[in-house]
Image (tube, rainbow, N blue to C red; front, side):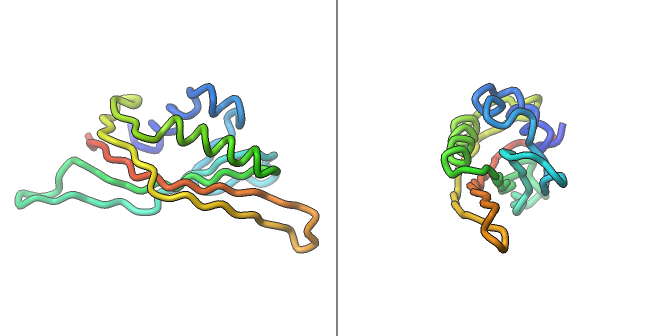
Length: 134
């Protein structure tokens, strides 16, 4: 199983997270017309470990989760559930050996439509995920 698949399965099985967004967790971009709240994830970088004999099986990708909600309170609640689910996780996640998940960065923002009639609150969380690639 690939890392993104394992993370998606893990998060969609996490009750505190799904209680707030249902199954609205998507790779890379929100589907057209999706009702908020929702979360997207994307790989920001993928650091490879090397030794004198080649690439190590340890991978350290940085994944960014972007939470979108119609209120700041809702966006923060979802971001907090992501932190509870992922921060300091160690163990087997749907077949992948996760050595450590570390929260690296948090960003909050507010986006408005041109006429200010629509507001979208965003919480962005960046996690470094250390895992052993099969």
